[in-house]
Length: 557
Image 1 (cartoon, rainbow, N blue to C red):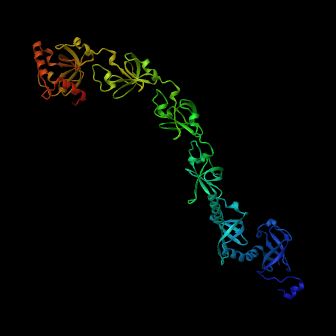
Image 2 (cartoon, rainbow, N blue to C red):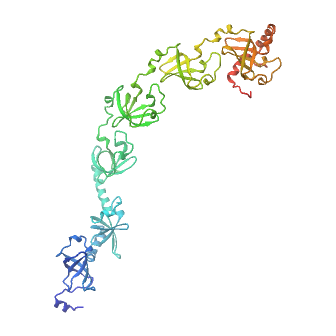
Image 3 (cartoon, helix red, strand yellow):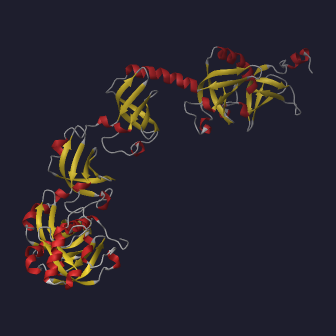
């Protein structure tokens, strides 16, 4: 090693290892910089130690730390980065102790965050980079920002920074100022920050406001994403400000006039309108007449004549249709529409077309427990009640006489166009045989018939003219009969005497055992039958007929 005297003689500086000295750049190479520090030989500094490698040029004066006075090649090894670190460390400690701010440049991405050069290398956790942690950390490399020093370890000589705290402090300051200045009715510019099912949060340059989905559009909106997207800049109206809770309610549709304000003028009741089907629900269809204005066509207003089970049977989503305005409720923002009103109601002329007493033809469209519906024309049905199907037979169900699809004739009994009902009768096509029963049957007549039904009290026999007669159990045989089914069968042909005719009750009593009686014997049997009273051992003829109304006969009876 040179002595001080030798060094002075050679005109060189006296430098020591780990000392910070000033040097001048004399050459910039591909990966290193040659620096003259006034020593006997030049020093080498790696080019990547400079924050701006491209900006380094010959003649620049820089601070360097002497790491080695001489390496194997006889060159002084220098470090610009370590010189800056050592030089800035005290300054950083002072700033840190005061909780101060520093400016630095992001140099690299590492696990969990970024490396920032603030004169020394510091660590910036990714969670402290911004209010919302960015996904692409690489995009910050090479950029300079201001940071707050939040932690320092002197032993390890490392520093932890936060950019988020500065941003939040700045936002809090802006938020307070915005809340103080903001009043309902203001129009503010904002950026869509987040979208949810119920609305969108708008960043008003430091203060978040809620734009509810109901305040986005006067029209129908299924989801906020149909109208907005994250990052979009929009102008919004301030609806309400709660300074204590720092909440701001915003509106978008309020920038435009409410289309319902002049709704009666735009769509007078009774006028024909056009619109698009925007929603189909079980009870009707919503039709958009203009943006923000929808009307409802109830399922009952789709057709005068067709029985529409659900709107989707006749309408489709997005279909363009015509309708008639039936009613308007501006306060509830409701419009009632009708499609069937576009055509004449066929029931208006039903009483003129189908006069009471006239004969009509039609096809059996449906059977119910109480009657049959007959289609007279498309959309207009008449109903034949079971009680109007036969003068003589008791019909328990219309299927006993009719089946779906049958072409039948009937007489119009009643027309109620208000209730849209037409009553029909089949038996009215013929004269009631009971009106002339005396000409058809007389007491004592010998008649032939077929057993149609069995009951515990007797058997019913089908006679001519579709009239049934009852053979009471006491009138089957001279011998006592315990069970009807032991003596008679349904479908069996029998001969019997007419022993009783009750025109008022529309009933005929028969006797099989009296088929061979003389007139005298017949008169005696009639006396016995007439003497029967309810509650006695035998059931009266009249009550036997009544019992049939409530008893369903089976083979087990």
